[in-house]
Length: 206
Image (cartoon, rainbow, N blue to C red; front, side, top):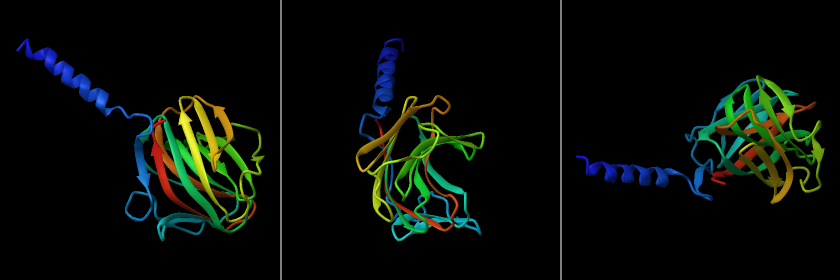
């Protein structure tokens, strides 16, 4: 029995090494073709979230409201990519990605708008705060109106990075949340009826 112990320890060590994701490994993927893949599906007077023709749709019918949905496993360091577009409603909106979701009161969000603004922020104990700036900032790299955008959120260590269409827009640091689920978010400001569609979500190991 004593001679078998080193072999057992070696096998356990190899198994542990093999279970660690490598850079570029896919951690989660969803093309939203299947309506039972785990994303929220509900509707009320304020908002609606559902699958729609191979996309995931968030509609915000009320001014000054953010709506989100989360899915997938608990993740620590992750790069999240999604294709998104504002299908209807005012250009003064926001939409993008969530990482390190703890609960509905605590998570990071990395977003753009259809009028070419962007920001990185967090909800902590239900209070929303921008992290990269005091206000949402403008970039001509974000095409206005109903254009389709490739949004990338990298949450690695204490660093949060937002990119759109391959161009980095913002980077900041924060120490509050270390791990959590990923998600999608859309929101309105002064005008209602924001309608955002997402497709081809993929999360990879940095």
